[in-house]
Image (cartoon, rainbow, N blue to C red; front, side, top):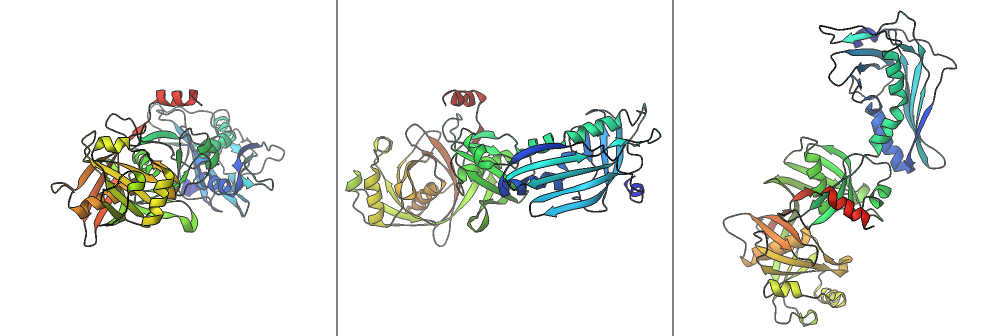
Length: 456
């Protein structure tokens, strides 16, 4: 049918019949760039009953079949032809015009346009100009089977299509402001502890505003996703963060339910020159992120300023040097009271930016428990740190304390009031220990959402 319509003449414009619809999508250049994607992918013409038989972006001369279905399970589908007659591709406007073809239940043109206005607002404009076609016009049935019943096109197909076009602005707004879903990353076997992250699987018009209202310390926005590559942006309620292993793990877990992701892929976080690429792999039902090769060696340092005189520190690092110190058991680890000033001074004296304290054992079959401090990196204590665990695993490898019968260990991070459980995969290398870190990701119960909202 599409081949037949490709040579069909255009129907005439219905002067004075133009009806307009407009939706405000947000503000700024980023919103404008993201808002173009649904138009280029014909998403304004896709719903439970309306779809486009085409995967090609709009282009002048392109013939399009718009299909209507009477219901989700109905065998009745009607196809109408349109042709793209104009593309608007300007620095602050993007859109297209299409014109109906013979057999369409309505005659006229439709303009679909995203515009970044001078006042910084981004709007979606719909300017259809239909008028009912002649009484003899007839849509083409698609897949009509036994029991097919004809429906008068002007009173059925035309009315449905017109309503669908007028609702396109609402569909576009919904696509651009999809709700986030909450996950907890690095939880224990009971689903408790870890970090809360809100995942937005689709583009959002204003990610900073969405993050500010998400109710979690981190929000991650999926900019693009393919089987072997995922592009993310991470925000706190106040600013764009750059990258976060917790956010990446949450996003991968959500995307895994929606896309056929490869078991080994690349995660890109951030935009522009500062964007960071990281390898990710699915192992035993958990996503792990590559931390790199950790090199570790013993060093001499006076730890009396932090109350740990007589302990033997190690220096471990991937990109940033970390001081790793074993303490005398879990009770000592839990009782440690950090002094930010003393830890900062110790880091400056040893040329390190982080401090890891650890002890053998822990809950949920943990091989080791630890706490992580880094006032020189901008935080007093981290509740779940992939990089710090990687430094600890590299130290255990250099000391010969990693298990010989497996390449995977569980670790308990024991920040008071916010426990976490992490997984680390390791392998000895010529220069140190290769480490990947991940953990369990679970959906946060609705009851917890409500309790957090009530406490705001």
